[in-house]
Amino acid sequence: MAAPHEDDVFERLRDKTDHKRQQDELNARLHAQHNKSQERLGELIEDNTSLPVTISSVRILHANRTRRSFLERVVNPILSANRDEPYTLEEALTQVGQATEKLNRFGIFKQPMSVYLDRPNQSIASSSPTDVDVYITAYERGNYTIKTGTEAGASEADAYVHAELRNLLGGAETLNAHGSLGTRTRSAYSLAFDSPILSNPDLKFQLNGFASSTLKSWASHEEVLRGGTSKLLWRSKTGHEHAFGYSGIWRQVTSLAENASPTVRADAGDSFKSSITHSWTNDKRDYPLLPSSGYLMKTVSELAGFGGLGGDVAFFKSEAESQVALPFGDTGITLTAGLRGGLIYPLALPGQNRPQGSRINDRFILGGPNNVRGFRLAGIGPHDGSDAVGGDVYAAGGASLLLPVPRVGKDIPLRLQAFINGGRLLSLKEQGRQSSIQNSLAKTFSTLADELPSAAFGFGLVYAHPIARFEINFSLPLVIRAREESRKGLSFGVGIEFL
Image (cartoon, rainbow, N blue to C red; front, side, top):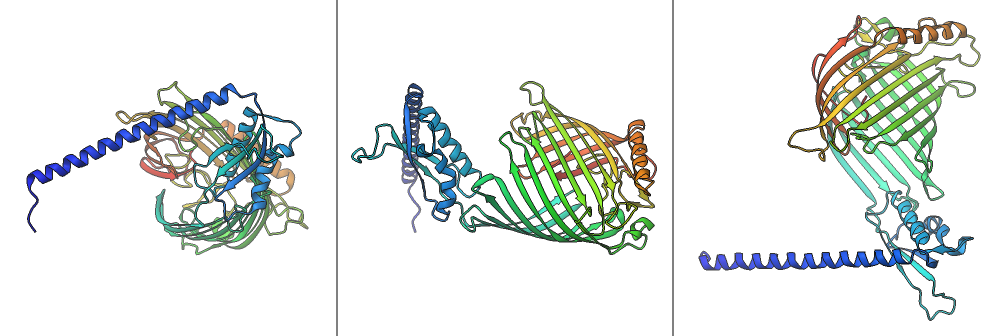
């Protein structure tokens, strides 16, 4: 084939350039017309906010797989026929917007959803000049999503597959299946069913079954879990989130290393935990993975083996966490500070007089790149030989100064970090009768208040990806206790919660 003539090539390039310029001009005109239309609509609404209107019908378009009864519970309350007081135009638009936002929160419709208003056919005798029909365009998302990938974090890497089935029964029900294989969490499988109650995205029921096998090298054993949980979750109008649930879990401490300590060997074998749990979260941070303003308050409580719960472990366990982020004007510089604490209070099983000591499965661990930096994973607290055996009471805190990276800017979620953090993890020594436990708790809290915490400071780089926060830090330990394991130098952390 003959090569194209040079003039032909230039002619084609010129035609393409002219076509692109014409298309750009057309797009600019259309954009300008759209903006003018929006401005006129805004002016019209602003001039008629007190105009009386009647919402005579609400129609949701394209929601073919979603049950009619499910949608009616969302939109029926905004119909004028179901209200005692008439609408103004402003009130009607507010209610329609709230109903649309409620539909958005179910996670089964594509974004964005569009809404438009229309007058009903005036030839219908029952229609009124103030009647308005509402149309909500809600295209449904696909039935399923399947994801595969790999993850790397602090001392762990894994490969996973995750499948999500949406809107199973036409009421925003979701079924999630997850499986992963990794270096520390050797295997983890779960199947979870989630359903809103009475078409309310702020009131949900969850049922979850799971199995996992985790290598706990810091304590010379592997932990195998099999069990299930059920939860009722609700969110208040002020943003407070609650979860109340029950869990039944068979646990096994197995595959002990040859040099496993006597403490680990004493807890080896099987146990069954039957417990009720409650969590409360009030999160007012603007961006939880890298907050620039706001605060977080959170508590988690668990009661196991008490009364008719059954199982062979009994305790009350509680944790509390707080965080605050303070911006320095509009510079992108933020100071964050956080505190955490927790305790395990041993209880007696039904039919027994003496409370039993906590097991290694249930104790707290402290230290690592995601909480107290400058220490190895589970490096803080009680040790038996080379094993970190966990503790019953802990307190930890830290502060970080986050600064924009030069030449990158404050709008990119990448920050330089300077931090200081520390904590203590202690065990209850006297675990006989109830009175001795109370005395031991008092002594433990006194120790927390009187002695310096294990601490470290350092600096590093933070990046907030939409799914996780990544940190690489250089740490220098300041206070280290006997047998605790510090980590001077570089460390890498990935997760969704950081001190």
